[in-house]
Amino acid sequence: MHGVLRRMMDLGRLALMGRVGPVWRAFWNRLYSNHTSIGFRRDLTVLFAAPLAFQPLDVRALERGDDLSCLEVETPGLTDQQVFERMTQRRIVESGLRTCYIAVSSDGMPCYMQWLILANNNELVRTTFGNLYPRLESDEALLEGAYTPEAYRGKGIMASAMARIAARAADSGVRWVITFVDESYAPAQKGCARSGFRPYLRRVETYRLFRRNVEFVPLRQLGEIPQGQRAIDGAS
Image (cartoon, rainbow, N blue to C red; front, side):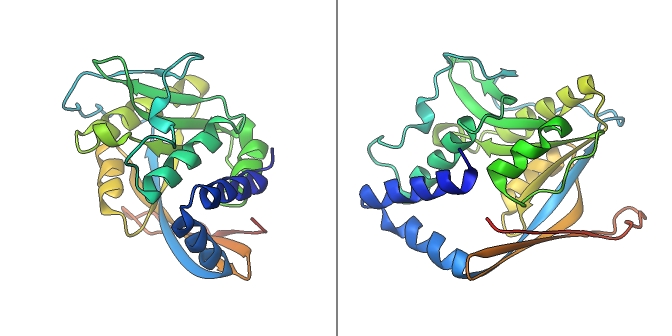
């Protein structure tokens, strides 16, 4: 099902649950807003040792039958934001993207999840996320949908799991793994840096009357002079 329709269905469900806050925020955001994210990139040809989490982790592909109760939205005591985050994850799980990896803690429960997406999924990425990401080249992969269940946050899991998931792209001949983080969200940016990623791109996302425009502006770093910039326009 098209990503836009799925988002509308989720917003309708939130409204029926009486959680109108996220619905109004989504409405006003799409009416008029400006949002900036930083694109991070890791070069897999550079040796990098994944940092250790505060507990042992088993990182593997998501399997049928894995316990995803951490994404249930009817769990008592959840905030509106937590319900919204879980709905977003469920939407990606059901999008058709089959390359989700999870980190499993010592209690056997998934404590982190993220998709490692190759260039052969460019069209599905576009269908699921609209124009939010640059089109992947054959030597690139995208990390998207990072999620740590509430009970496992603050334990260094993101950086360790993310680094190990990214490294798996080398088996497919990928050199560059990219990911995007809200420019104002310092903890996630620190997690990316600890996972071997460095900033290389700024994504400027604007909404005007429900139409989204996304522009990608390269950053100067480590003496590298980026070649031009890419812009993608379209509706979401």
